[in-house]
Image 1: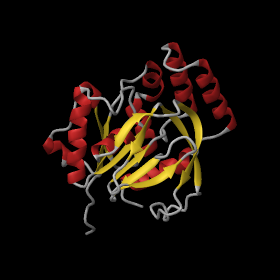
Image 2: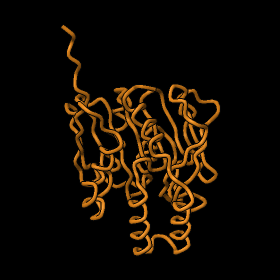
Image 3: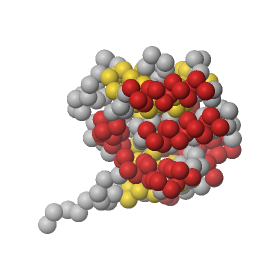
Length: 247
């Protein structure tokens, strides 16, 4: 009799409050990540860490991998929940748990490894941008991906420094560290592979209304989406392959 395989279990560490739009259309950001990463036969849970909901030490052992989402907060900030998240990430690293960090998640994961995160020297990056993979990395050789992929971006902070133990996987003409990897268990992506164009359009409108970006940022971001399509399927393949040990 064939040995029964254990059901794989993953957790999303949610670092942002759900917008009304995303909640209504996608069931919240948890639903957005489920749409990109979940496969048949898996269990997915969510911990709203921005509201103080964290997995216990016993619960950590139940999971094969974790995903850290984007956030309106600064990854270089010292909010109580961010400091607690840094402690959790160091623990996950010590346990060799798979962790995928997206945008804020990418930045806070870099910080947990000893990297430095701060405001981007060139300001906001909003829209669809071309990401260039390092020619020296062999991380994606099994996936046979092209040397460049388009990705939705929405951030004003960036990773400025990483310790030498961390490998930079990709960059863009705006951001030096678009992706990084540490060992075979931690990976960060600065952009938003989970985003659809409509989510970004709603976010641009929200940022504009709150005076967090200027009109020219919004115009440029919207124009980039008209001119380019994000390579969502390729990013989905890359992220799921990493998270599930298929690279």
